[in-house]
Amino acid sequence: MEILGIDIGGSGIKGAIVNTNTGELMSKKHRIATPQPATPENIAKTIKEMVDHFNWSGKVGCGFPTPLAHGKCLSGSNLHPSLKNVQIDDLFHKITGLNFNVINDADAAALAEINFGAGKNKQGLIAVITLGTGIGSGLFYNGQLIPNSELGHLTYKSEPFENYAADSIRKKEELSYKKWGKRLNKYFNHLELLFSPDLIIIGGGASKKLHKFEDQIKINAPIIPAENKNEAGIIGAAMAAN
Ligand code: BGC
Image (tube, rainbow, N blue to C red; front, side, top):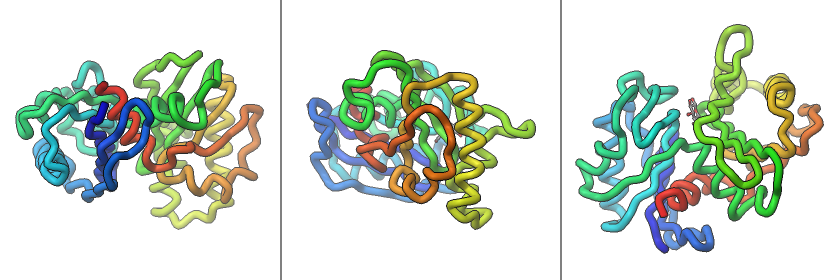
């Protein structure tokens, strides 16, 4: 089935038509900058623009960078505080007239990797960790998603780890890959202490850069890049809407 997949991130909103049986993109990817401030209304307008770009009238699957329960944002995370408690699937439906299935962005990326990427046919506990504006996580156990795991919010010095080790922090503080890798090493050691995953898959924009910092990460679990690279979020969002 073909579904429009949209991945909403802190800096960009990306969409493409996805074949949910094969995980392939059936169109070119389209990117629109995330509006600032990223209020519910501004994001909804951008979603309408995306739907219009594809002249789309079918189902839409959307990955959203906050924890969600049944289409409702449980917090505003890095986007905007006013998103808390907004029924985001209804808002997108109102502005486009289309049916939306909205899930957490990292859960979406993990879904794509487990079905069509680096986690395919792998059993046990797999943590897909996305490194971008924030740190997102998608946890799978024997092929079953445990939603809304929010492991970027494990704490370091009383702050969420994502405020210390996200890719956006590397850029903002102009950290070398070595320095950033050392920060990530602290993060992955903490994660391993708590969850002992069998495999860690790196997703998000930084999946392409794993080779630049992997020598700093000293943990027991193997750590590998996502195969769908930056497209996992789009593919997984579409799959979840199937
Ligand atoms: C949010 C998560 C999201 C992650 C990556 C965090 O700030 O709380 O829900 O998955 O950023 O976008």
